[in-house]
View (cartoon, rainbow, N blue to C red):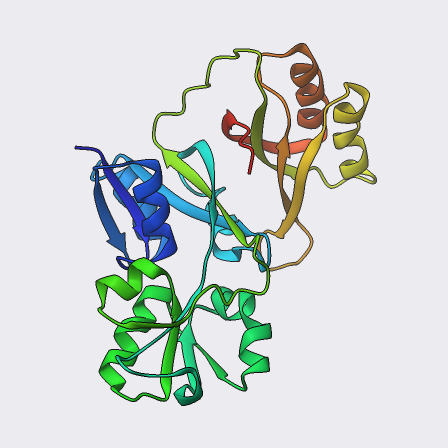
Length: 274
């Protein structure tokens, strides 16, 4: 049976993503993203499902610092429509709820509803874990924001469905493994993810990216991260709409490598449509 690791507890959105991607598999809940990745690196799991960004709340910061350090590779991307539920104890009503627990990302994604209903948001480690918290508190004034699956698992009441700010609220996940194989180019649409660190010369970033423009390649994303404690060196994460086998990609990569101290390939995967 395929073993799939994720950060969070059962009922979390990452757990739902695991179920949707790998049906009838063994799902391993982990306390941190690092632990999920470590299980795959150690051969104790086949895949790690890692959230990287949300359409409403932006990127998941911890993950973007983890990507360059891991020995895993991105095998696929997956988009999950995130539907947040206001969850409470049995027989609790909306008028009873004064405080709500959830992950900061979920609270951010539901801030309009919380403000309109004068409910105080309280940050917690995980959406589904917040259900455990309100069970322990045993107070009808305490609620949680989590998934329908979490409400079922913890036998709690869904007080209000779909309370997210944006009804197109979507989280993007990476499917990561140790394989490191470049998927065959079948003429479809691909994304290649890289991390690079530039040489310390004037206009290095401008010049390093020029090859993508001159070779007609689109960059979906570019994000920077400070490396070390001197706030001088920067590391960049980019996503390129290209397959490594294409001539345009090879030409652009040559230029990027010329102006970079290091370039790390993180994976090439099929571009998914939402």
